[in-house]
Picture 1 (cartoon, rainbow, N blue to C red):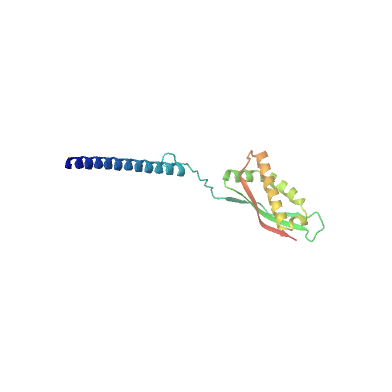
Picture 2: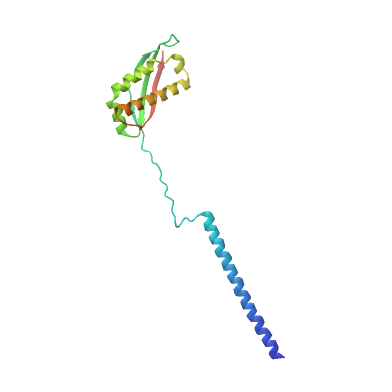
Length: 163
């Protein structure tokens, strides 16, 4: 009977070893699946690196325009408008084109400003609208005469006096 007990004991130890091996294999499969799922959900950053281009803007360059004095066409509280402006670009070639075509730009701006009324430019919104008009007008002159489609980014009033 002792021999039968030893055989039973050997059989139990063999099945315990098999059970431990099966549990270890299932655990490894679960760990592998967990790692794979995590990599899939978070995205694989190691294999493919995203190239992010940062647009680095160069410093703005300002070019002052000559002072302009305009008579208002209407009989409002103010009769004269004195304006000083600067144009801004980040490309010196654009400002060089502005300088080269300054007679055309100045003529057209004087004509444009000569048509405004006191009521149009007495509010902040009116001044902003005028500033945008001036910018678009200068850009169109550059496109026509210097074949520069863009690059002039702003027109800014540095003095705006109504009397």
